[in-house]
Image 1 (cartoon, helix red, strand yellow):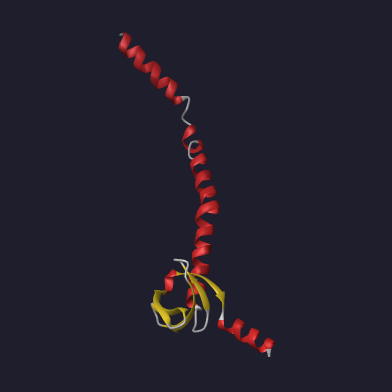
Image 2 (cartoon, helix red, strand yellow; image 1 turned 90 degrees about the horizontal axis):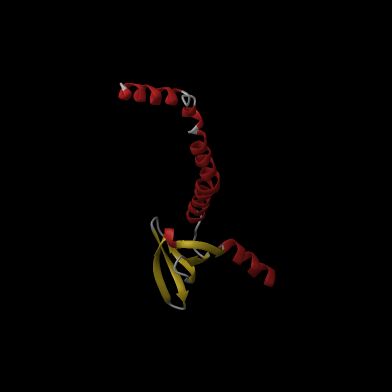
Length: 116
């Protein structure tokens, strides 16, 4: 008899916490929202800007590769480009490895016009 009374007592205690199902999900949902706005969304924005920058690369742009090489683009294809890092020293680089455009070819032409 003691076992039956003990089992019934535990069941009664659990029914008092029946409304806690949704309230236990609120912190998890709140954490996901915080992670989205602090981590996921800025990373997606940065990736989009990088993809856009890569698509606008053209011959004559001065770039920095992800390896830290500074150079001028001499040829561009769909997947790769040739970068001149010194006089008569050219390397082939994947387009995705360009980390930054230092000076676009249009900016360098404007600077030459101002000097003249």
